[in-house]
Length: 201
Image (cartoon, rainbow, N blue to C red; front, side, top):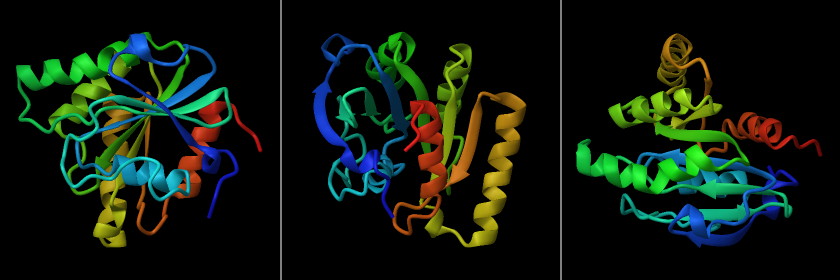
């Protein structure tokens, strides 16, 4: 299972700050999530590449903003994982230092994919992210990763619960289940990215 646009993804650059990011033009879709939510595995599955994004057993490995070029105009962006430390002022400052400038100021950002482990969705720090993107009216797609770790019934019931809560509190966000291992939910995720990238094969 491959997608003609995303399988062309190649590493463009890493930037510690927005100042060092590629020019703010074209289309970007960014990926955010708590450390160990399966962000790298999801990016590798989306692009049908084994090691585009480094998969690490150590939470909090991605400390830079990583840009992946698709076709010269469209880019996937891997944001630093958040929430590894206990939620507190220090963690919040660290998280905001890496993310807020990019999400708040990047004009070419069309949408944000927020990855959450399906066994622990909507943690406090995930809710902060949803509140924050709501204030900015940035479209969000919640991807409940590691769906293969649950049986179909519990996975579906978690998805419905998350969708209900999003509809009540964060109507700018949609949600789906996903497994990088089994590739379930991949066509649905590709469709969402296609819409944001204004891409039709």
